[in-house]
Image (cartoon, rainbow, N blue to C red):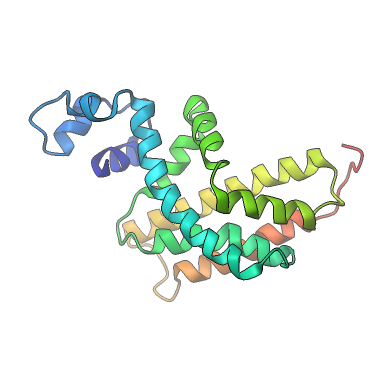
Length: 199
């Protein structure tokens, strides 16, 4: 799984073969990936699920501290910080955020992973909290801004992960700083004026 995550992050989902993954993992048997995981999508799902469970455990802990009483910034914090906190535990280099970007750009994998992520209790609770805080937004606007927030979080984390791996990150900057900046940006995104309020 680690070899697959790295290769997919570096080269994309569609260009990496099971043979390449087996070789990168030091497996003499080039059919090992298919034997253990089945299809490429099954392998992608397993990688995302492993990280998703860890992120959601952090998220559930944060949500439990709110007890449904949080304001918008509290719920955005529960959306953002479990992701950056988890990524911060992976060391340098890591590939999870860059891998996630590749998943989001693959139409089949994106739908599969998004549907699965939405079943996680912590994320469900955050979505409900955000919907309560954003009830004045038209549903279509709220849904699209949610998609924008997801893209912003994943892309920003991916770029920071790459900067860390390449040695281009500011020495004074941390995953906590990235979380602070994302929290501000996502709150701003959700509270921005609506040009066409009827949509």
